[in-house]
Amino acid sequence: MPKVLASSLRKGNVVDLDGKLYVVLTAQSIHPGKGTPVTQLDLRRIADGVKVSERYKTTDQVERAFVDQREYQFLYGDGEGYHFMNPESYEQLVVPADVIGDQAVYLQEGMTVQLSTHNGVPIAIELPQRVVLEVVETEPTVKGQTAASSYKPAVLSNGVRTSVPAHIGPGTRIVVMTADGSYVERAKD
Image (cartoon, rainbow, N blue to C red; front, side):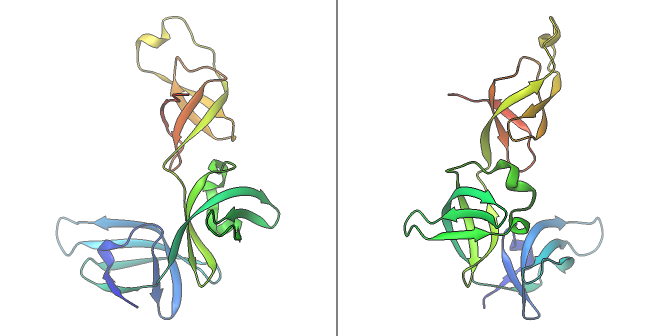
């Protein structure tokens, strides 16, 4: 397996530590005022889902595992997991809920995602950065409130709570970031 610098690892990469595969959940470079810069990694062991944190000097090397990354189309979710289809071979793959985690609320039927597999086992998923959702509930707009750039709480069609500008009302379709559910803009459709 190829060795790579710890500082080059990103979310979704798979590494081999002591013969066990781990998927990178977060990778953060820390540059203290004094001392050596380090890379803090939060990892999930693929075999059993155990989460661990590791800290490496930015010059340390780790073994990166070969991962097959392809586009898949989301079909549906059920008690078994989340079902995806390879648009080229029409092969279907069931991804367990713990692999998708809290991103599951953003899955929409027909959505194209990047799915990483290792020896045919799904290990990580990458959703599009932005999705279009409908505002189902929000406070009414108060006259004169739109003058200042104030935000108000809203509930989206997938159940996620976010903050939207004062001029957005129920039934409005908006674009949100899948990473944190933050409002980007009004949907152009």
